[in-house]
Image 1 (cartoon, one colour):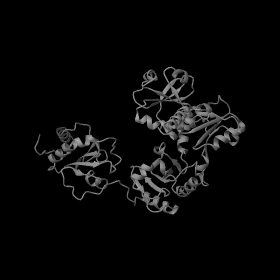
Image 2 (cartoon, rainbow, N blue to C red):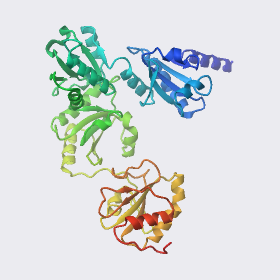
Image 3 (cartoon, one colour):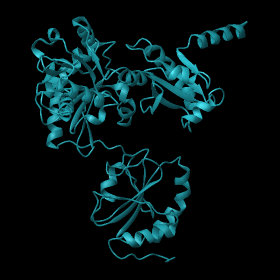
Image 4 (cartoon, rainbow, N blue to C red):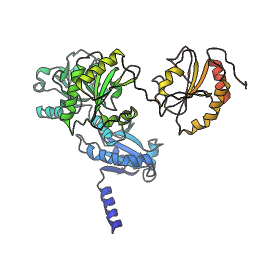
Length: 477
């Protein structure tokens, strides 16, 4: 009986799916006539595909309610969709592609439901919506969850309108656009482009809109206008736009949800804005949902409750500074002043400094990095490793032997850092393990990534070639 109920539930879920199942026989019929459709090429055994499935299903249901609707489909590349997958060059799973009238382009957006929905909404329909009437415009503005840019023009042949639409095509992933040729809708905004801030990003002491009135300006001028005014006094930072906030930036992370708790979100943003208005042109300010950056906050060792606000400042060197104590407007202002004055220490993720560090390979942690690697009297070869990395484990005895050979050379240091427990400085880019850098005496700000072999002889030859001073090798090979 239980098995029967389970089977019925499974069957119901399959039948109620909003994701279109495609096969080789139906692919062209379903895809070629669609203005836009997102297609997932998958394999049933693929773990990443299984994790994507519920997110994809949620996105499919939500996007069918979009204006215009955006269909989502999937193709099983191991069964009835083999030829379609081969035709479209699918070599890994899942592969997602956006089709417009049958013409594919790679999908490079998020893989969770909210991200898929947001990405595809911006891809759907024209890059700018033609406003039908006043009610349509008011609805568009009321539903905006980010900046809405509206162009008010005289006619479709207007050169200003053409430049606006070209800029909209270029920026459709960053902003929402609409336009009208109805003078009754323009009012005081006739023949201009206006960026309207969403209601939840309004504060009493900042503009709610920004206008571009130079009809002779270029498409590039319009794009610059959008970028210059996008963030306002306090921008809403999320994982997609975090890189657009110029440094130095001070960010307040808290339990932010504009839809479920708009009043709470606005309450704290307005208080952050009170601080921000005192540092215009000195610091960029942002608010962010803690849940969007939880991993980063965990790395900082934050131990407060989910309701506590975390404030962090980042400078041009990508150093992070954390505000201590309970948050308040006065406390935040004091923190920003101390940050700008350079009177507080940056946060460094670090293990404790080793009590004994006399081995042939020096152990580097976040707190002693400057003392060892940035020592101006030493050339340093440093390995960034992960304890679980198989390649790192294979390298370890060779690296130790290298350290022993150079132990009597006072100008050279062989070092290693566990990059999972310690933060490398920003000028050391570590994307995989092991990653090895050479930091010579005179160029500590510009370390060189080691690209050679990983036998002891390869390291020795490299060091002989790169060392600032002549190298003496113990037990020369």
